[in-house]
Each structure stands twice: as C-alpha cells, then as structure tokens.
Length: 121
Ligand SMILES: NC(=O)c1ccc[n+]([C@@H]2O[C@H](COP(=O)([O-])OP(=O)(O)OC[C@H]3O[C@@H](n4cnc5c(N)ncnc54)[C@H](OP(=O)(O)O)[C@@H]3O)[C@@H](O)[C@H]2O)c1
Image 1 (cartoon, rainbow, N blue to C red):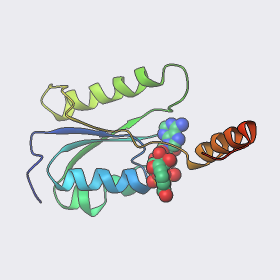
Image 2 (image 1 turned 180 degrees about the horizontal axis):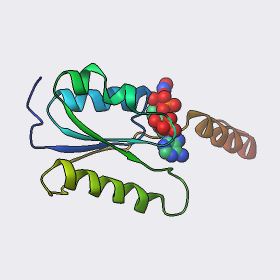
Image 3 (image 1 turned 120 degrees about the horizontal axis):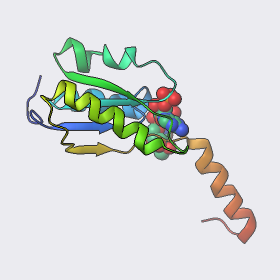
C-alpha cells in the first residue's frame, strides 16, 4: 500500500459502486482514511475490495439520501461520527470527491432545455 495520503481523510459520495467506488478504493490504497458514502446499494463489496480491506486500507461507511430535506445534515452527522471513531476524535476532512449523481437526470434536464430553446447546448 502507498502512503502518500497517510494522515489524510477523504469523503467520496456515491462510493457504493461505479466511479465513486473505484475512487474510494484508490484513495484508500494511497493511505487515506475514506468515508464511503452510499444511499441504497450495500457497501460490502466496496469495503471488502482489494483496494481497501485486503491491502490494509482504512474506511468507514456513511449513509445518506441526497436531494432530500436534511440530506447534508444526515451526511455530515455520519461523517463526523465515523471520523471521531476512526481518526482518534479528529473530524478534519481533507479531500471531498462529490461524485454521487444520476446520469439520467442530467440527460432529462438537457433535453428539456433543448426543446424550450429550440437549440442544443
Ligand atoms: N459513467 C459515466 O459515463 C459518467 C459520465 C459523466 C458523468 N458521470 C457522473 O459521474 C458520477 C458517477 O457515475 P457512475 O456511472 O459511477 O454512477 P453509478 O454507478 O450509477 O453510481 C451512482 C452513485 O451515486 C449514488 N447516488 C445516486 N443518487 C443518489 C442520491 N439521491 N442520494 C445518495 N446517493 C446517490 C449511488 O448510491 P446508491 O447506489 O448507494 O443508492 C451510487 O453510489 C455521477 O455523478 C454521474 O452523473 C458519469
């Protein structure tokens, strides 16, 4: 395991799968303590992935549905609790990867804009 991010903390939103999962694995591989955010997908595959547990990486999970009332409070409560537990009480966050999202929503917004203006952006 590399250690260039040792003593650094990271939050990756949408880390239960896809790009977020790969990002969380890489940050853990590089030595960061990673908060693996998820909403509905079980995080066991991310947490037990080679980039995290098997290589001695450090991570904890933080569940929150984003896009609803109170979402940031829910996420930061889970983040703070995880950091307190896994980072000796220090709740400092060094790296934020704001990855969670849904591709379909972006496509729908783009097509609405296109139809109202008559041109594509
Ligand atoms: N893949 C591409 O080609 C591509 C291209 C351009 C941009 N992007 C952007 O890159 C990001 C990752 O893409 P991906 O393909 O890796 O996505 P993905 O496999 O669909 O994973 C999406 C992640 O976001 C989380 N998420 C989605 N909606 C959420 C919500 N309302 N609240 C909390 N978490 C939520 C999911 O959590 P759960 O599964 O736990 O619910 C999951 O962990 C997205 O923002 C996407 O728009 C992707």
